[in-house]
Length: 396
Image (tube, rainbow, N blue to C red; front, side, top):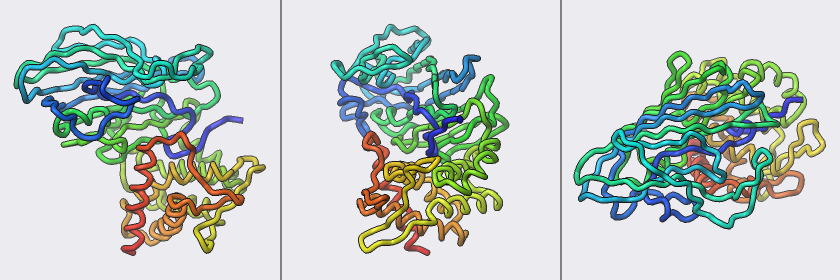
């Protein structure tokens, strides 16, 4: 049996994120990049161009993400020398990393900002789990532009899953002064048909021309919600999985969850925000089927769990499903404000999301919660979605 985890962008193993260049990384506390401009910093990221290539390597269940990024910086103040860095993640798994400033190669070092953290294993190799960064020193002339070019590759190895999510993080560019004037991120595939791309987010600023996807942002104050996420399957196309899921989704709740995930991706795969009439009918049917057994209680909401099902559904799985998927349901409602059917779906899903947020959602006599490893940024995004969804329901 093929194994694919369920979630809007969590399609299998979540592989470490790559990110924008950031200032003074040793000042960050265990990877917590500060929100907003860093105090006393007079350097802005005027623009950036990021080219992502998702490439099949020829090895089974092993791809790589090749990144070429150009950052256009402007020092608005006096001449200064600072440390800059590029986040690697919890394990040092980048290769071929190099950085140039104004056309000249720069020496850098790999630094773990969380030394002494517990060990973790990656493909049989024991690494120190931490907060790894490539760090270098950079001189900025007074009131002048400068240019950084960064290149690296990341191996996307997934032994057990065919579906994978990788990403490129924009929010690490937030501490530079002012908003990023213009950010353009382009995605291409190589030796991997474009039909294998499942989920792309965010939909804001996204367009598609042929087999090339482009995100374009103006005056960007990046947060975690702006980070680029790419979900793909190395063996099966989106259409093929839809057909395989149809009979299973008639019997098993877990398969219904997965069908919701697939149906919600229909428009974004083409760089669209809105769905066609047939896509809209399909996604509404899937979303209704997944929560059909939900009932209101005196204190909140209750859903059924099927721990012994062919596709087990536990209280934890309910939490993950709602936590990962509800924001996409709100996006769907915002994109289709005139749809009565979408409004009906949003009403039910919002009651469930409100109950999850309040701790009053019950499954199999247990309080439903998302996994404890969800980040504060993810939790904040979910709570923001609950606010947006609740406001839309009140308007109807």
